[in-house]
Image (cartoon, rainbow, N blue to C red; front, side):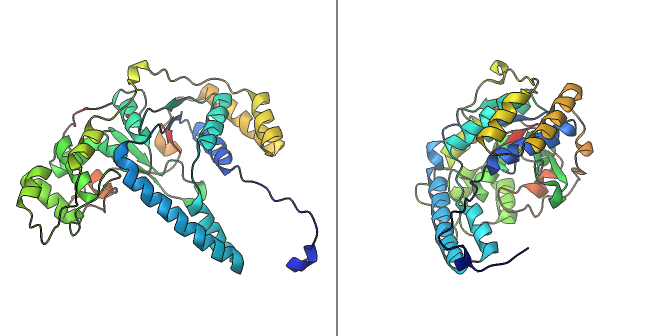
Length: 344
């Protein structure tokens, strides 16, 4: 290989590939799941609830900061930082979603378009036993009452992370909380819909819910000087979003897997998006073969599962991570509501 300085390429036309990483990711990860006996159904977000505007504004600000850092890294030619900050500037657009939906349709993989939050729709499908579990890195999926949550399901094999399988009933039993109290706990720790109360960490939050049973009682008894309540704290509205989210009725959703359309996939990915034809055809062959024979496979045939263990919830992990709580025992929760990402 010959190495040159930048100025050696002065006045030369050099094409630079535009990434189609969203299509590459969904194509190969779907094939990998199907190869292991898992039949995925994807759920796409609909319109965000109004309460989420604050969180969306924070994400926008983080992307702006990442863009500035990216410009600095590009000026200095720092390859590692360029890659890192490039990832932070990515925003999923409607065009990305439409392209993924088109690919899934060609692959014969079902998907659902949620009217609002995808996590809530996944939880509704799991409660109705349309699917075994919801797969997401967002712990709010538990707060939306999914009976089973899988984490790290679609992580690359290189990361070697075991799949976390969290059962909501064990979480509730271990905490000795009702579903409503669990939702209040999650709001107290901070969620996408309203701020948390500064100074109250996971341990303290569990103790407060255990003692006072509800956010209303906690607010009534807290020292406002030590624990100032956020202005216009819309905790009750957030609570209702978790307990009664906007979702499609699972009974009206027909989830079916079909044979992939090989030539149309090749036409789309190879001729329109620039993928390698050899790799695409090999991938589609695997998909077709395993879709015909796939039954709902055991998770341990895919990765090592992370079993729920009777771990005390005395030190729950920070907010959306109810990971430690999830490894606790639990009361049967109320199925109260109906509401990237692949869900199994």
